[in-house]
Amino acid sequence: MKQTTKKLTKVQLIKAVQDTMGEGAPTQALIEAVFTALGLTVQAKVKEGFIVEVPGVTRVKPVHKDAQPAHEKMNYITKQLIHVPAKPAFTKVKTLPVKALRDAVT
Image 1 (cartoon, rainbow, N blue to C red):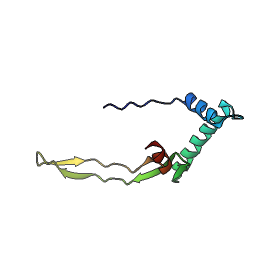
Image 2: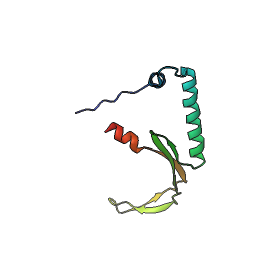
Image 3: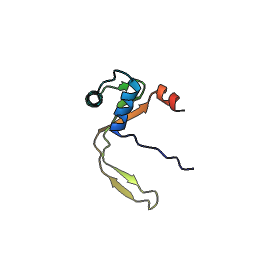
Image 4: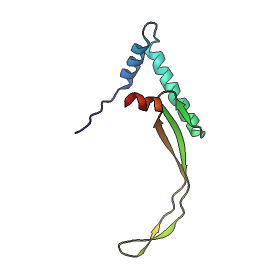
């Protein structure tokens, strides 16, 4: 059975947040500004090496991968040595849903 997922656009998300807040909700422009500020803050803090948790939604953390030196490797099929070039160190970003979100979905 093929599972289909629907994508929620930015405008739809802002409208949903506004509807959830009910009477006296902030304007769409203010909610959009909050999302933009949240995104920029998360980017800056993850770049500094912090683990950032957006309460009730996700945890964003940087994962550092060490540099790999150049080396020789045996090709298991032809039994010949092949040269594997060096790879520089890099940082990946990993996001994980928090328990509250996992429990709400299941």
